Image (cartoon, rainbow, N blue to C red):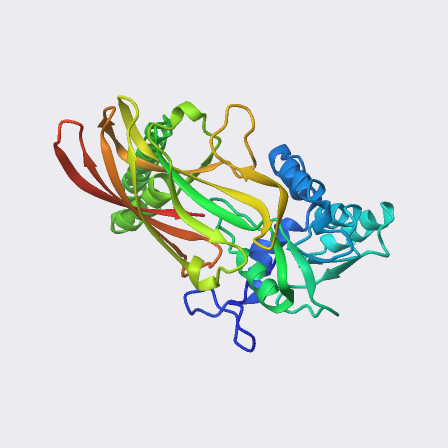
Length: 377
C-alpha cells in the first residue's frame, strides 16, 4: 500500500508537491494502522465493499482463470484468495506491513500457498519474476484520494502490467452535492466553547500568575477554527440530506491515469437546489467500477458506491464540508461551484480543498460569491 513514490524510477520519493518524503516517518504515520487486525476487520465487515469485490471477481471469473494477478496492498489477503479461487494461475500479494504474517497464515489455511505468494515490502521496491495480467487493489481513501495510495497502483501498473492487461477496479469517480445537516451548528458551538475557555484561561493566568497570554489568542483561534470549522467530517448521510443535484467532479480511468492527473484536482460544476431549506455545506463521495477493458469487457459490470444511502453505508462514508453560517436556499436556485483539491505540503496523504460558490436564485437575483478552504485529515 505504499505510495511514497511519484512513480518515476530513479527519483527520490516525493509527496507530489516536490517535497521529499521520509519513508520511515510515512510508515509510522500511515502504514502502522494497517498492521493491526482490528483495522482489517473494520474493512472486512464493510458489506458494500466486500460484496462489490466478491461479485466483480466471481461474476467475471474468465478474466482471472489461468492468469497472473498482482494484489497491491493485500492486507489480510482476501482479494488474493478470491483471485485464486476464481482460477488465477499465480497471485502476487504485496503488503507493506507485518500483516503479511497473518496473510500467509490465511493463505495456507485456505490451501493456496502454491498459488499465492505474499510479499512484504513497498510496491515501489518489490521485484516480481513476471509481468501480470490483472492488478487488483482496494486503494480508495476518504473522498477517493485521501491516503494517496493510488500512486502505488499507478506505479505497479506502469511497471508490471502486461499490454492489454486489466485494472480491478477499472474506473473511479468523485461526486459532490449540496447538503443540509445540524453538524454545522454543533461545530460552531464547539468552537465558541473552546474560545470561551481560552479567554477564561488567559484571564486566570494573568490574575493568578502574573503572565499575560493574550498574545497567543490569535494563533489559538486559528487552530480552533481549522479543527472545528475547516476540517471536513466523516459522516454517513441519509439521502434526504442531499438537497441538490449531485455532480461528478473527477473521473479516473485506472488504466491510463497518471499521478499528475490526481495531484491537483480541479473542477467547475453546477447543481440545482431541489427544496426550500438551509444549505449547510457540501458532501463528497466516490464510486468505482469493474468493467474489464475495451478489448475484454466484464461480463457483468459491478459498481461500488459510497453515496448517501438508506441502509447500506460504508466505512468510507461521505466527507462533509460545512458552511458557517448556513445559507437559505429555495427550490430551483442554481449554483456554480469551483472545486480544487491538492495534497498537503506537510503530509502528502492528507488533502486541502478550496470551494467557491456563485448562487442565482429562481427569481434571478445573484447572491454574493463565497469561498471556503477545508482540510481532509
